[in-house]
Length: 509
Image (cartoon, rainbow, N blue to C red; front, side):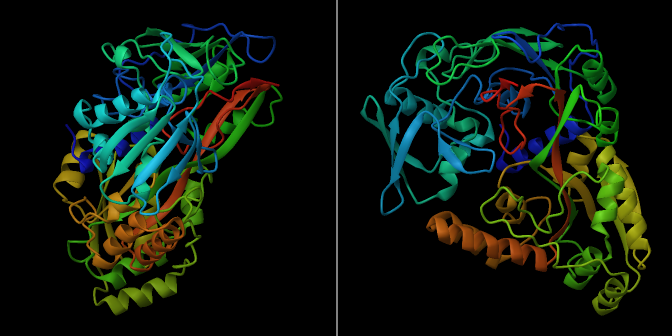
């Protein structure tokens, strides 16, 4: 079982795998599993090209982003979910109330939902699902359910959950895979036969190639526009792009190389959808190791980096400049890019004030395209102000995880962090690989979790400001969500801010 730290590493690893278009057992055969009807008629099918095929369909015992990407929201539903703007909205729970002491949540459940095996969904199933996270799940995500003291069915359609201590984070985590509602009769074969209440049911898994979902004929909500959705997996960006160009697939679910968008832009056959993600590309500092214990040196590094030029080079100018560890879809987002405006003269001044006028730093990056490209730009820009940078490429995941993540043998690194609302995990835990230890930041994070909604926003904004101004890391840019699809396919998720590739809104134009 992974520790929480290990879970974050897994999230980092999976995004890196996705960005490098590498996935064990994927297929590069564009002819397999094709044949779609794209955008017209009732029923029909649509095929979506993805990377990182699941190793199993059981996300209760198998870490990885690929399983919830395929199954969460589509096959398994949660009591609450996030909309495209990051707001928590109803799902299987039609409404909920929170007690004055912020410990007790009372959920009113839809009376119409059924599992794909025909069993009705009730509050007893919700109790079973919540308790099972604590008793049967083995992945470290289960820790988010530890705050639950009791879950009980008040009536068949009303659930009451009591927490041991107030926690704003708990309701948010219920939008993730730990909030998936399961049938007690449907958990014996989770790895191969998922049973949920969602708009789609699992149909088939052609290992190494594709997963097929079928519309759920007894779905309690709006019926899906497509009767069949095929999730087809590819090993590399070229095969993925060619599959769309040849009509084998209808959608590139995650563009792997932004510079390749030009072959689709301006072509009336295709639409390019650009949104946002939770993936902060971070120039991380080893805050417990000299010379980066020196705040003036850290501030000099942030000032010496031209972030706009870097994003143009690393990711074809696609993405968002953020300035701290908060994406725009979080409620406490503030644009902090103005904290350290690019200035070589100011960087040199801060460097002189640091007392380490000619430092040498080891930048150890995973051997992944975005990290290598960004690393070269960081090295060049820092050397222009007098900071010598030794750039090492480490094999990913094994060497990077061992050397940087576990052994902390680095000065700087570059990696994308994809865990939602991950500021507390990355910078609130001094044992994490960034080794950032700021008692005030830790206190702000704790106050945010226990406070009112307004207090949460205020405290998290304060934490993000402290993090930025103390230069605990440099936040290079936020990865974009890039999708290319046939014209006429509507309802694709513009923003990739949840664990799911949400198919529930798909429609035909």
